[in-house]
Image 1 (tube, rainbow, N blue to C red):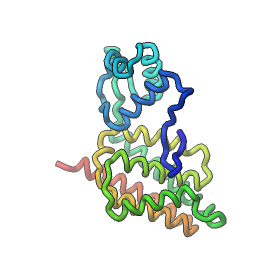
Image 2: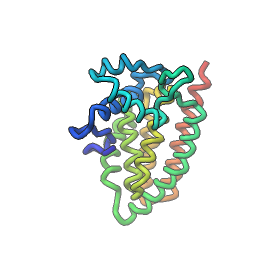
Image 3: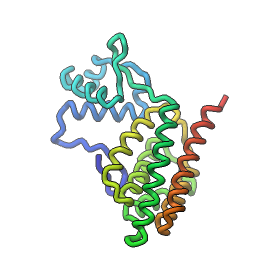
Image 4: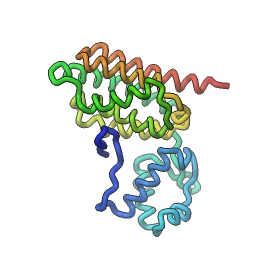
Length: 228
């Protein structure tokens, strides 16, 4: 996983990737984007035909996804996309609230001597457009949301955290209610509040702004569940 020039995380598929690698990346992308739904059964015949490949590289790709917990084998031997429950989603939100609050505080402390990290400066410009009401699809905003949270980790100098964060976000993204949001103005404003506190070198406010952001995320999910 690397970042694009604008800081957006991406999965790299290059010439050195095997056919199994490419099938793995394609299936995982489709699952994360909702093209293959949570709980949906996977047909090896269909996936092999879509990939234009034999079952051997397909099974290598599926084994990798199964090892990651993205898919699971049912009692009848069928593979299906592993559902992520609301309880699991809320646990991830709480964990990230604590860890990313600490990361934001550390980023603010570092900004006192180095200024705003370039990755956060780049994210700030894009985030302002969403805060001003720019409409977009869920998957497009998710890329910029990825970039924001990854940028905070880089600004804090936490080299191991981006990979762990990516795994948590991929798990959360598979929960069906994650994809119910289509307006991101308030979320963008929360991001800007975190960036402003970091830029000001105010560790206490940066932590509070990030924790407030995750409290709002939790509230948005619970509000959706309460709908009739």
